[in-house]
Amino acid sequence: MSDAVTTPRTVVKPKTERPRLHKVILFNDDFTPRDFVVSVLKAEFRLNAEQARRVMITAHQRGACVVAVFTKDVAETKATRATDAGRKMGFPLLFGTEPEE
Ligand code: TYC
Image: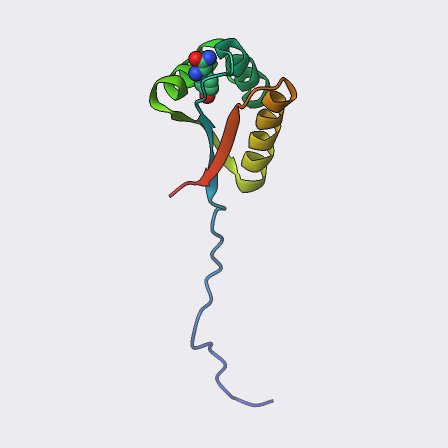
């Protein structure tokens, strides 16, 4: 057996970073009925009536509104499903995603 000293020179500290969250953004348009926007927000994002109405009105007045934040995959899936719900009814309703800073 050797007497060699085997103390490591560097200590590796495992570091796990949280995945960046992504915002789902609702964009205003001039055609989709307000009540339909509210129903999509309730169904796809599980907002209650008051939250859904507030998000819809904010997008209506300011042009866009953050709906919620999720992991990238979930944000993209929900934005696509919600946009498709509008398209199915012939409305130009649009949801997008954007990484959080
Ligand atoms: N601006 C639409 C209207 O007046 C309602 C609306 C609100 C549409 C928010 C989209 O993201 C939206 N009928």
